[in-house]
Length: 305
Image 1 (cartoon, rainbow, N blue to C red):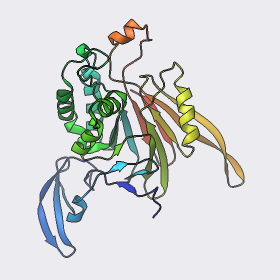
Image 2 (cartoon, rainbow, N blue to C red; image 1 turned 135 degrees about the vertical axis):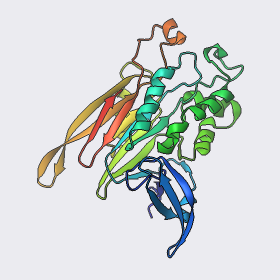
Image 3 (cartoon, rainbow, N blue to C red; image 1 turned 30 degrees about the vertical axis):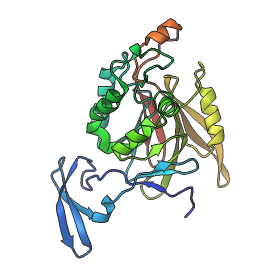
Image 4 (spheres, one colour; image 1 turned 180 degrees about the vertical axis):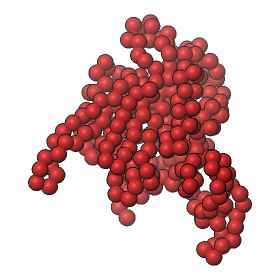
């Protein structure tokens, strides 16, 4: 097997009858095919079984050059939660609760954490700790409790400059990697491809990264990303708190004819209200929210929330 194609995200167990991921173990049953884990769906109240060995899942880092595979039987809506900044004084709890409710209520919804998941201002850091509502360790613990209702739909975790870079540079460990391990999902330290397979034939490529540039023109960094990851169909970045989606159309060769090929640029927004540092520097006011990408068998759609 190609070493660039050897990470398969097993997903969380979902009901084959109604696709709900709200399922509970109901004991192990011995069958002709070996031991089977029995499950009961809380949504439709039906039972189903999976091989016990499917439970022995090892979640690994998605190293540079590797690809994360996510397989779905039907179209899926993937919500990007970037720059949540949980623990900041200006954290928008109401908007993030809206995000949780949206993901939780849709059986075909999945999501990912894209960095700056917590505010994380360590002691003696170059900026004041007064910008956060609780200590970094409490941020980590309370955030995991907050997202518990939708952890079963989480595809992966990525770190950003607030959480990953600060913790690595100052403390020698990656707090975002620890979070991914606790949540039992793959961890992206750097930008990379996620293959979104819909049904048996359609494969889309989502390219995601936290982002680095802080300029007004968010497309400049997306242009760089799409040049490096040229097989991408949707490109997602956070960091600068801009919130928008933008179709990028081009003409490609399809047999003997040209065909319109649509890709998407996405800047994922944030869950941070107008912060003091932004007021001090006269940064423009940006709408709080997130981006949703819908992957279908014949197209991708993207919008802001």
